[in-house]
Length: 229
Image (cartoon, rainbow, N blue to C red):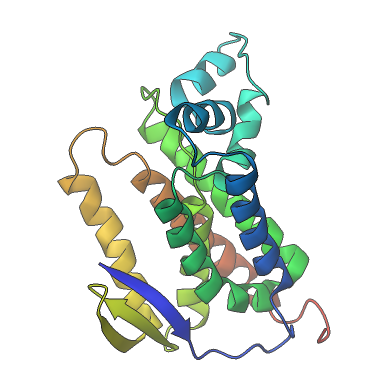
């Protein structure tokens, strides 16, 4: 429905968003180097090996051994770094690039990386709970990125964000409208999607909720963790 283009929020502490850039490079690099885009078979192998598969996770909890490149529990940390298509990758990375630099500025590089992973894990956990019978793997950075969006809208609700509405109309809007509208679409999607089509939406909501909670708890300490670098 819309894509973000850029915002007008300056950096207060960091000079450049190195962790955000590293995340973009890592996600894009894994997509290219693993060959996920080359065939459905390769994508399925990667998704099943590094993605969160609810039925497999619950089998592991029950003591049934899982054969894969990493232990099933570790997929909560690996799934945000694998993507299903170019569109999937570019969409997530665009939202990350526009909004993550200011959240990194608030948390500091190390704190931001921890925050990002917490949101990703939270998204994966809510997906597990709500899609417990699913055997489809969850992959993609959207759970972690959703947490970034939640943090941004709490910290900079009045920031002006340029978006491309309906892929053709450029508009400057307050962040709270843009990201509040984005979250509303995720919730609406849960009720409108057919069975099996709402797989990733719970991860979005879980990541967003974690982002809100962590930012609220950490807010008194943000922008204070380091001197300008």
